[in-house]
Image (cartoon, rainbow, N blue to C red; front, top):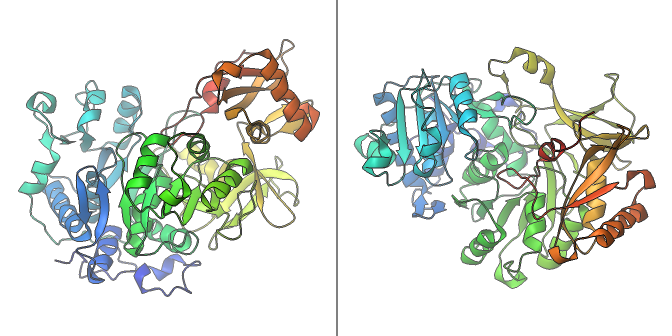
Length: 545
């Protein structure tokens, strides 16, 4: 069975290796559906019996995924869900996630994947904002919607992924039963490359979450610009991503990139820990690994971390926040594999600034991915000189169309061809970009800017430090100074002597005014689902002016 629509021709698969890396949008046919393309090209390449996903339920082939996607698309139409309607995906990382996402895209329906660790209030807001007609939810997550479903006026259907006992289901539809009752209909919605394809909500750390609207072409372009030429993914690779599929980073890592070349992805529905990831690396021949800096740090310090001869890694990528040079060097020493750091955003869908294997400059985020342009802008709105700090703006073909239902924020972020990142950077003499932190995280101490990342990186070079986060804190005169929250490898070393030692350690590496005036020891730090430190939560604990 082939699912490629008769109106579509596979786009990226027609490009030569030399052509990848600078792919304009017009290389993709005007009439285009991402789901039909990504599945059709693999079936036409003879991969129907090749593994596409491995999850706790078993191994799933490209042919099985194609069949499930076609059935899910047909089931949505049977439910009366029409083109451009939204459906809400709150799913753990199993085969049901790509089934639902690609099935919706194939039907011309707009999937809205969301973070599985949010609150009932968050889900209520996003359901109302998106006006989703259906909720597709993992059974374990269903209780978080107990008070939301009846209060969502546009919601018509609830489909539950899992065993779903009668008591838990409350009359909702079972995901697997719905697939079994549907036909593997080859129909593909007649979408275009510029049609609204899916939304991703931003984290909402500075206000209500914003729905970034993406088009069909952008998914393919992220693979053509980054996944294949930069990461170097190949058909025989086995991939694992710490970042979940509902994140922009994880969506590319665990779906778009590996499927674009016919590779295999190992999914973990549980929250990633050093122990669980170590077990996967030992069990499966994972060759390409996508992580985040805090996870790499925790992994290196875990007793469960495998030995070099127990893993098959050949490529390791990092994003989410700047990767400290010390962590990257320690990983290289231990496993013989470079970790290439990169920067991407929900608004740009994936990474557009990156280091590359064989051309890493540790302590930087690398150079622009071919196909994207970078500029740094000062507070006066003008481009800064090389070596000066400015806010990073990016221009490229994968930018979101807008934030749904939020014109003010859309106009502020999407400025013509350019998208504001909210990140502060410096371009060094070699053309590599150095992260100075989020614009909201920057500190002004004694009239001079201090990057929290610089202070954190200095702390992390101390042999006793496992994790560190630095935020602005008001002293008794109402002036902002750096404060460090530190997790030690051995909690029994906490105390005033260690605090002074850490302050002295920072003073030896950075300008004296940058040292943290306070050190607070913690057993853990607040993090997102991918391990990114939530500094805004630490700032919220501080004294108010």
